[in-house]
Image 1 (cartoon, helix red, strand yellow):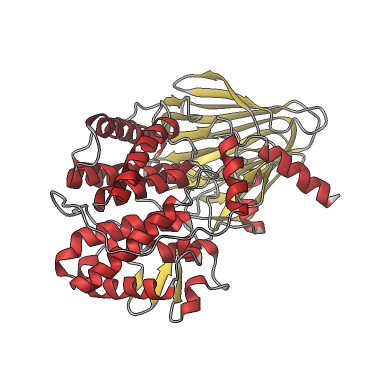
Image 2 (cartoon, rainbow, N blue to C red):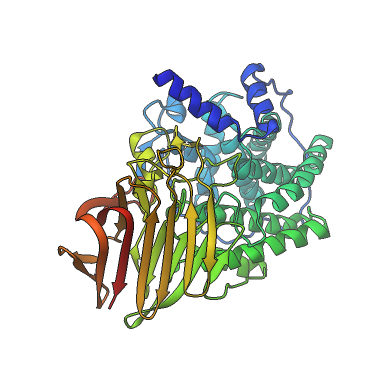
Length: 546
């Protein structure tokens, strides 16, 4: 029975893949490990100026062997530690990114960084271990090129030659394992790295990397950035990561003129629209909302992105107040609650892209709310990747401010980054003050129930109407930010938000309780919070008012 279920999940997942993903998945599994050409000391192109972008990333390397990633600190004192079986895969990936080369204070650590790079070269043989996988390769290639461009004049020539030789081999390795089978942000990172390498090295081979990468970059720009400005994986965190990629490419062009006029302008246009999308999707506290795989501390903050744009002289668009982000599937409502402005952000879209939902959550019709600068209702966020029970819970419907029907999820999430069954969401009505949407993520259940939700923010009240077209037992979840205090009652509760007090009432429920839960504002972080759980059948009315 378990085997049949896994087979069904696999079939339901694979049916959405593109042919190129299937072909490369099979090819990469069956082919022998690529053999790289003999190492060379490549010629480096003459740039107009060295890399000068501001430093934003916090320090993560503390010489001689201490590293801190994802709120966890470890020593890398032995060769085996680069691929330790006791460390999480994502932590090891971060270890091999070498982000610290361009972190705050990095100019004071140039000698330590040089020694670390030479150590990595000596202890990580070609095509072996986490560091030679395409995604960490991509990020490290870019980081090493930035560092070399900044510091080539202060590094011993023999050491710089060794770094250049290894770096060139790393690019060769990446060019042999582009992540066509994964697509999305991974493929974009691969292409970005090849553009950097093609612009940095002056060889015939590098010219080929650059020509192919620029062609693919144009294609991925138009594919991955939607008409409303959002990145097509629908994750605010990854949206910010891709915005940084765009700005890195713009600064690369300022240094090397590697882009043609049309491509440079296309990147600037995508970036401007991406800022407009981000301004709609940020809370009044200035940071991103938690939809799909999103949390703090991975991407640059919104203010850091704005600072980078200012350095580049890039255009920045802002959104109007209430907005429907049609292509990416979010809506924003703005109004007043009590004496403060209020902002509600809701997921009213389907899981997308269909062929790569690895960072999607089963969060159909979930929402977040801020009153003033204080977040009030929050989705749970993420604290880990992998195939753990906690990772599954954080992706599940019950970890979001929405409705669970018959203890089921609104999408068939499984195996950490996969989705089998998909919900289909449709917006019925949307105005400046309310949105009405419906999804069929529970159609696999008896009676094929549909969940319809109306969110209204007007007349000094937040009103949420939920309707489920079946007799199944339903449960609505309302997660409170840790800073929000709640006083439970049988029918009407009160919550304290900063200096204001609000009432929260429900109609149509069969059971109401306030339970302990956790909120995850970063990898490795779990902060206690409260959740209002409301059991009902068919209809539920929730109202928040002063």
